[in-house]
Image 1 (cartoon, helix red, strand yellow):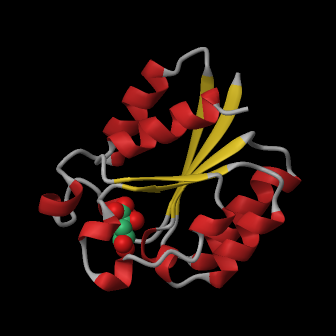
Image 2 (image 1 turned 180 degrees about the vertical axis):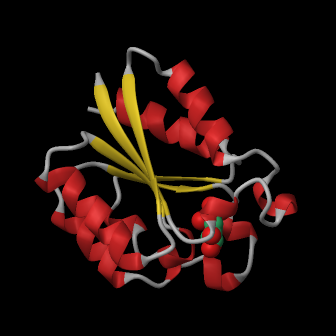
Length: 144
Ligand code: DQA
């Protein structure tokens, strides 16, 4: 059984209500319910959301230092494009981290084309709506 921690960054607490034309109308709770049903017996899925950069860094560190997870699915939201500190946290832990985006960031404004975290992540999945989370969980389960 793989222990997977999903971390969502800023403004992703508003999924389902926030810019539905970009992020859809389903809530993260709906997504988590279906992930947990789909991967029952294969993955134990924990979830954290924070609007604060330091909380995200703490969650990444503790997943490793406290042995809480075998892999991380991270949607860092806008911190993806700005946070060297989150990139450093990912590089600091010996855990695979899959970078996830709901939208296809490369089809959007130029400022979203640059990710400071991709280079230290195991891989990147973007553009499949909330299905991006499922693909990332699948990637962690099948990747060895
Ligand atoms: C996002 C894309 C980011 O550019 C944006 O700041 C977000 C969400 C996505 O999931 O598509 O908050 O990470």
